[in-house]
Length: 216
Image (tube, rainbow, N blue to C red; front, side, top):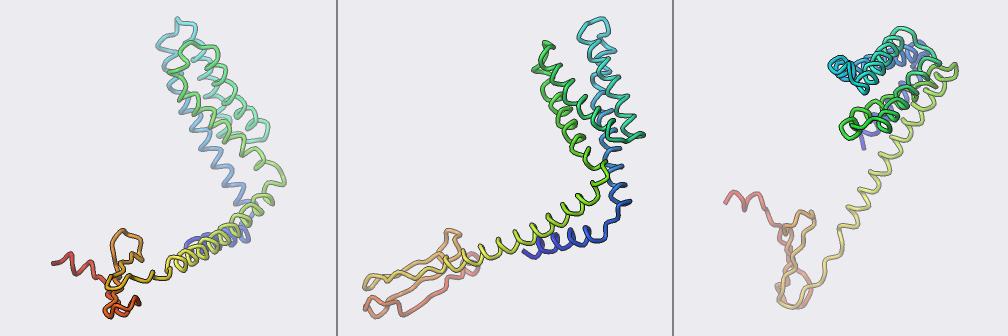
């Protein structure tokens, strides 16, 4: 609970002190990282296209890789809403077309899915380039902070209720018998209630010390 409350409080503080310039810098560097990842994802296609340049499928790989590298470079140095949209759509549409029309789709499945996921992530940052993005970002941070604090408190209350319910009433033993109870839920008996008088009512409680028994 304490960790969740601390994280929620930090998110609320961040939402209150974050400036528009700082938020813009975060978005800028995230898109720079995306641009680098886009370029890196095109390297296998570029090498395969060069190695098999006489084959038709290799030419498609080579052309797509060169276009992807160009868009990745543009995303690193020139960031605007139109370019981000073009890059995101390119990363989603081209892999889908490859999986549909090229014969070796099974071998391409994982790399193309990575490109599609990267395209979706790029498009998710498209709203961050609009004028209202900063206000929305602060609202999201505040909502996340309060949600984290609330969830931590709820989980703490649930834990307390489980502990309270776990302390169930000890069943009455039969005459001359003992009741073995596992309060901790670890599968080992930790408390024994004994009826030494034979009246059916526990009159003696014995706590089992497993650590001491293990040392023996």
